[in-house]
Image: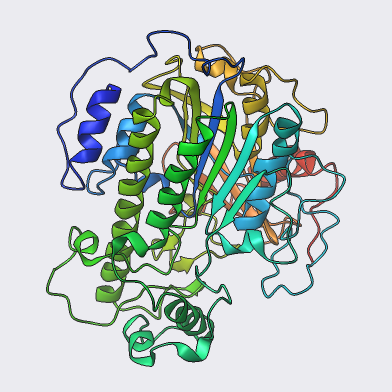
Length: 488
């Protein structure tokens, strides 16, 4: 992997999205103590980029998406090549981040009053579960959450638990912030396509109403999230140690980045309607040209988000905080862009485009910088790792693993020879050889041989019933506690 020093990182970020030459230089380790001045513990920043696919990050193998800042981060981080969410989608994934505990297999799920979206596991953090934020706050950390992920700040949720500061940026997606009747219907028409279903048109209509005030790039959501985060740093440097969670809903749809970003990936003279919000289902409503445009819009959203993430990292450095701060960057899941006949996020469409996520740990001492690990890392590992790195015990409730040994090239505390995950009524299991996808009761299985078919294009379940049964019994049933995950 090519590696950038921090100064080269700043040069790359300052160069914008036009690209940069990556040079083989040092890892940018801290020259002295990594601890905050006058403090006893490092700061921690966790950045969550919603719906960011692993295969859309340059450092992770993409040759056409421009992500210079994430690429630079990879050069200073331990990168996980096999990172997956243990639960999908938005809310179950975030529950596992905050609690360090698996959300799947979604037992005791209680649909939340006032909600309109009901995948299994979509609920508030249970009162009996502790959050990493509460533990850090009790130990004197200044804690802050800056997010535009509107699901977290609905009245039915409680994801602000333990945060001294929670800055909720209104207006994303279906956030009922502005009167939907104020939406410009011509713009709604432009930001949808004939095949969009009523649900997606309603999403766009609310989004258009919410963003009527927007004038320039700084008013887009990823810029707002990272600008607010930079403002927080100005205060946080006077009250270290701090724990900051930056939860950016971008690059989640609707995909409507400023034109200069989409022009990197498609004809600048494109004048058709924009597929900004995909249906969650079969992709046969799209023409080939609409698929091409949809992918360009998503790529543009990724690059815009990368640019503003880079600005945040620059500020972290200019305030002399980078050498005393642990930075973890990841995503909750990906999104289907018609690769296997689906768009959006659909529970049976468990393919790499939905499950494979980036996961970086940048240690202020440079531990693991520029290295890769093939350990099955997941989101419920974040809380135990953070606690370990600030010299606090991992809470007994937490079932995730402390990833710290991997930063030094040591084996994990416990091996993970396989990995399981769940999304609503479907579960999946993988090991070095195969991936099994099935309904959570074992019905409708699909099996893929990763050795010959890493993209999971050819289902070989028929004729390999013994492998299917073994993976269901020894992986899914075992991790689910011996009983099939419930089908709600």
